[in-house]
Image (cartoon, rainbow, N blue to C red; front, side):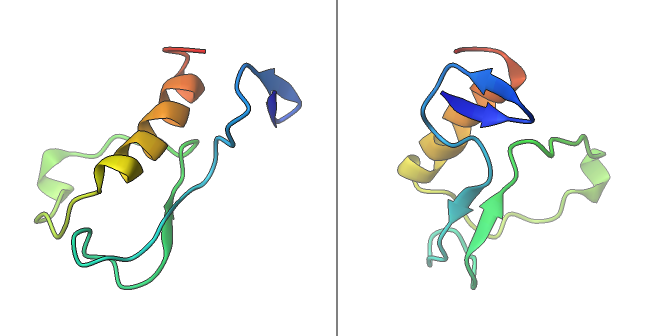
Length: 74
């Protein structure tokens, strides 16, 4: 079981952070990460232009721990 702040989570996958390697498709120039535990809301006017897209594998790597973190699935 993964542990976060002393809680046991019903998964063996690490929850945070999810690393994203740079690629032409995602528009990143340096390695970065998605912080699953740092979900925030943003006004639509603060969202800029799209500069890239995540590969399917990266999307799955983000969506699975995100669903566990927010309690949608175990």
